[in-house]
Length: 294
Ligand code: SD4
Image (cartoon, rainbow, N blue to C red):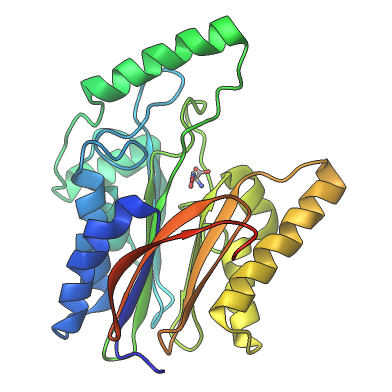
């Protein structure tokens, strides 16, 4: 059934945001506003440890954040990467999406843009995140572990009553990442993509592998060829995971959410994955998917 409005998001942590965004969409609000409010909620919540305030730090114990915003009508994109000490990276990314040039800013450049445009400065490192970092440093030294762990990006796609679509992503990226490391989340076509005439997709998981397949663009192109979002996301993830296994010996964790411009949705994943959906005919709900069931 064609939905008047809809929203899909990665991970259980998006559930309050999706509830908030769904209310906005249900009341005739715009997809861009619904997404910004929903992602801001997740960014501001200190216990979601991979997004915004309370996000997990890099190996130098600094919280460097990545975020992006894309408008499906104009195909406008705005993104920031490795930005420190600003409260809502998603709002900065959305503002950048309205510019013609210089739409993807990193590090000090992104911070200077945020400062000039009056965005709120805030130390994003919480005591809790610092303690998690300390424990992890010890664990890595004692057990000779890989530093990369504990990564969950919030990605959301929304469709509104005017049949406009948008997508937003926000993350602290991989826990213990190198300073300046940028994942897929702010990279168009890899971490996200949306086109009003087709639909949108967004990814979470190991950015280094998601970028190898430009997977969000791939899912949107599959939908363009007529695949249902479920088929498109499942096929893209499973086929590319196989490619990675064949060519590199293993595939990183990859999960994708997708929604077309009728409000039909789907996901593809190669790990256990939680996600949230709210549409005209479905109250906001959290789902759990496993690779075998999806
Ligand atoms: C990254 N894709 O920075 C992000 C992290 C993530 O679930 O989504 N993890 O690579």
